[in-house]
Each structure stands twice: as C-alpha cells, then as structure tokens.
Amino acid sequence: MKINNINNSGINPYKRQQNNVDQAAKTNLQKADKLEISSAAKEMQETSKLVKERQAKVEELKINVENGTYKPDPQKIAKGLINFYRN
Image (cartoon, rainbow, N blue to C red):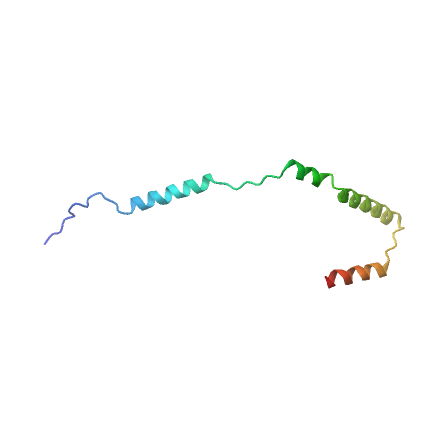
C-alpha cells in the first residue's frame, strides 16, 4: 500500500511562527534606553565647591609629602578608622 501526501505538499506549518519571532526580534533591536543629564546637573557637578576644596587639599598634601613635611596624626587616623567601621 502506498500513502501519498494529500493536500500538504509545500506547506510548512512552522513558517508563520518563525516569521513572528523574526519580527519581534527586529522590533526589540530598534528600541534603546536613553539617559540624559540636564545642563543644570552637569553644571552642579562641574562647579561643585566640594570638588574644588578636595582638589586643593590633595595638592597641599602632595606638596607636603614631596617636601618631607607631612606628619600624619596617629590619633586622628585611629578615630577616623573607628568611626568608619562603627557606621
């Protein structure tokens, strides 16, 4: 007995599902997250008073270390470590 494919010649039942997956992948590639920082926030970040003060302190410490005049206070260091690990 011979069985022939009747009414199914050339039809791929999974092709429609594959097309839907392909289209979903294309739309996901087009979407992208964006992050915008306002000009006011950028200005605050650049002109922060704290940044300038830290930079001045670092420069002062560099000069003291290079000259050999830097004398760290062991008690202040110990208090700073204790406060750091307690909080």
